[in-house]
Length: 468
Picture 1 (cartoon, rainbow, N blue to C red):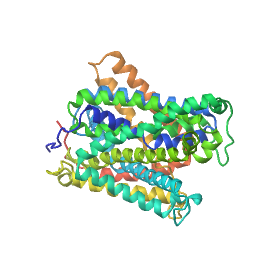
Picture 2: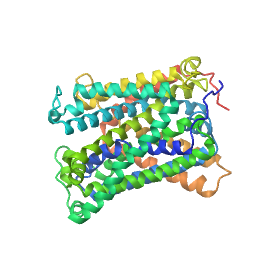
Picture 3: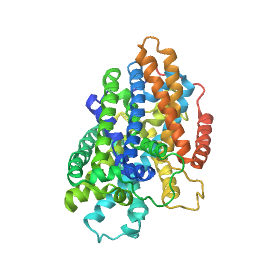
Picture 4: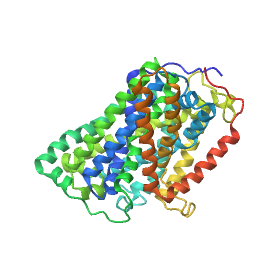
């Protein structure tokens, strides 16, 4: 099947996509989680951020080498197909389409809705909700769920009606989202050093109540950083739409990855200067914003957080829209003739995009029932759909890295051996951290994973062919 997607994105858009997809809710959402999982130990939390960033960078460098060799329809699927084989490429694509993209997109839609309501109730404390903000209405109230579905539809509409507009939205939100992070990093560090808050947070751990992660707090925290650092691989989904992809995609991955790591660590240290560890655990990073910048400016910065989450969700939806198409373009998956169609007016595979939206809605429903509402419909069959799919993709990277070592005979020692070996070690570390950190959740998730992958095997088109 001929690939009809046009070359419409440049290097800057690709860099913004890497930075924009990765830097989103994770740094706001998981900073509190990481501090909790490290038992309120700020230095241990920073170490977790460093380890998670190093693992991400090793994987980025490994895929950057592959990106210089292969530029087809969908980066990660292309790399899996070229190294391990077409069948493995299909199952990677099926996993990304049915689990990875929609789980993360649905969580990002919820976070966008959550922080929208946090902003509204901060500006107007009397804002009426069926479940009050103090009782968790911003987290699991009906307004939050309705807004979540609305944001999902908006992200789909932007990508479906105008992919170029979606690219421009991505670059704009990337620039905007860096404003609160840069302000908190610079002002927070100075503020904390002057009032001694940073020094106290680095020497005094908080009292964490509730059930703590047993085993290694560091491993649990590193596992949590996976969500904050993930998303860069989605930028490879525009491979077929990126100008001079073999040159620009590796640059975008590396530059974007380095920017993310620096911003995250600086922000985390800045937050430590704006509130005590205990306040950060109890109330999240919002309290640091208001303590440093005051209620008015603090609330304005909360609005930037909403924009940040929306930008990340837009980038994820971009991947969702192209998921089924990446399979159909190879003549694989259900109805390649249907999902391989590209609209002449918008240059987007609309049938693929519709399936992406439906899967996002389904995973969003599960996330609400299992992780927010505690519904009896799922019983104890609960797992964190914001983290476990990410660890799965790290596990799936391993065969690709190993095969790359065997076939990359034209690469130098660093690109052929050192970088992929480090990437394998990092991926194995993530898997081990997940096993230690999530325990029985892994079992429940694996059952769902196996069922979905078996469905993929059933609908796989045996006559599929590789893209040349």
